[in-house]
Image (cartoon, rainbow, N blue to C red; front, side, top):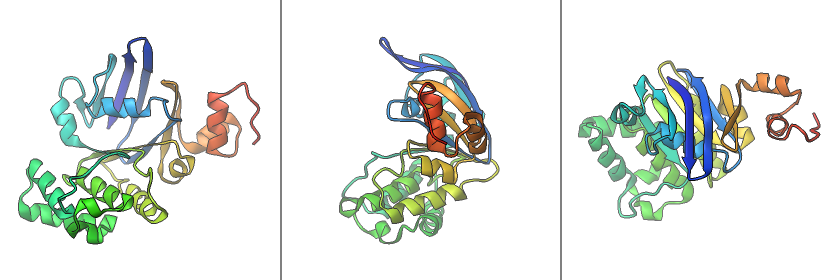
Length: 244
């Protein structure tokens, strides 16, 4: 589902990504873990064709991000922690509008909205204007908007940021449910507990460099640590002592 070959991104003299190479497979929830500034968002924006790499390329759902960006965009849904919604529109109006952009009929859109209502517990967000939403209500509709066309690849970049405990649980349960043949979810965060709960494998990035790609048990074994947080510090600061 995802093959990345030597992706590099520079901004002047600053190198945000250093020749990143890795793969992710269908049926996975694949984590991107790292502190702020690690390169996670840059990488995901390149994969979503929102940024052009300085070097290298990638294929997503069989489509090259440089040669066939339109096909890539049809294959993905993207959510980050800072997306907004038109304040005057209800959630249902937002979702119907985006469904139309993806070629869904009104009947298809309403059926999909009903399905997403069940999965994301949209409830009253559907018929309340977005300007009245809490952070959690807004993020649920943002997620529903991203997947209204049922894309095979979902990119979640700090999607749980700012959510209360109930909205966060709904999001994580939704991510669990995306694990299926022919689908891939890329889950980027700096919150270790989220990665430990939902991800099958994890890529650890630091200062634009890919340090490790493995299952969580494998990275714990490699670093000789007992938690993902300690394993992370053992990789990014190998000179420092880390209690097990």
